[in-house]
Image 1 (cartoon, helix red, strand yellow):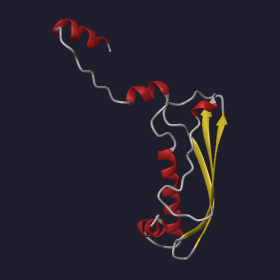
Image 2 (tube, rainbow, N blue to C red; image 1 turned 120 degrees about the horizontal axis):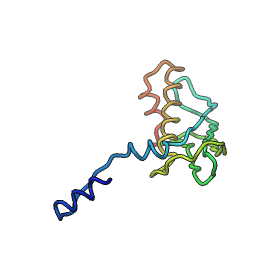
Image 3 (cartoon, one colour; image 1 turned 90 degrees about the vertical axis):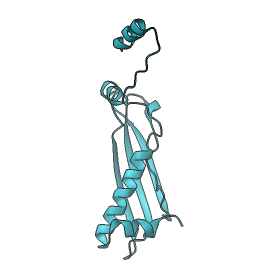
Image 4 (cartoon, helix red, strand yellow; image 1 turned 60 degrees about the vertical axis):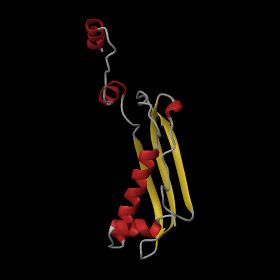
Length: 134
């Protein structure tokens, strides 16, 4: 930022510049787009018995941006099959960040928990607690 250089020269002291991540995301993109689908079986209580999860990530022009987004998060799901595939497209690669795919994997699992809760007419928190790792 040019204003920092001017401030340093004027004051003859170090100057702290704090920026948020908004300019980074505007200039370089955002998190990679994902598409998720799943099939699962559950008991009437909401306890998930098995799950097959397919996740596709748009990695742009290069597989170097690929991150694993399939996850069971903090849940104990027996017979879980997780598949995450990177798809090369004609779009630019997205921004590098810490823990790529973790947020997306957690979001997918929480969406699944809410779907199961609706199917068994229970509150999502009850289904979450029922499926949580002991």
